[in-house]
Length: 127
Image (cartoon, rainbow, N blue to C red; front, side):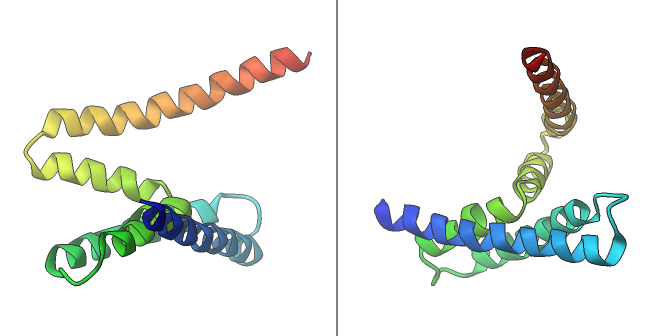
């Protein structure tokens, strides 16, 4: 158990630093006007998630700790969107089209509303 937690933490550290590097690089190249860094990590993270999940399905030689380090640690810290994408595709591939669509729309809409509500509450609390 501890070794899995340590591996997830290690992967998370690398993922977070990588995300920061992409954001700094994107801001340097594209400026501050649009969140290009976020778009890049979401797309690249989702692409990488597709690669590693397909590879893990074929590779028995990787330990569960290594898989957790890459998927939960690195990709989880690099972008949670990759996990969201995997969950959606998993539901879709199982033929659970309506739950997949509800998951997608609900996750995006409710998350945005939750962020807005928290900002509204905190601004009111600061006044």
